Image (cartoon, rainbow, N blue to C red; front, side):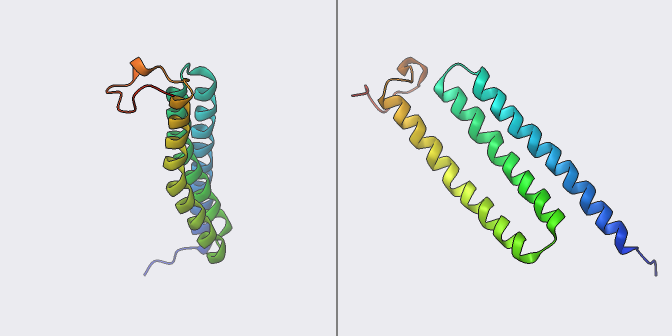
Length: 118
């Protein structure tokens, strides 16, 4: 039977956490750059919601690997679940408000199921 040093698993968990932190930070940075670079509301909304959620999940997973506390992991799982539930609803409401206030070009939408904004 091979003996594995417990410090090895700590090193592996720390390395994976560091990789997840860097990947999450890169995705969050990409979302911020996209927010500044894209011209339309819908493009900005898309570039913020998609990588931001995955970046947050990676950052919280790295934090869970680093903290190694079941109570903290439980809280982080709740934060991820809350983010996954609320992010699509928030993006939908931002897009709908943008359409109704005339910030979205109706010609870009195919088909235009909402009609003309009031």
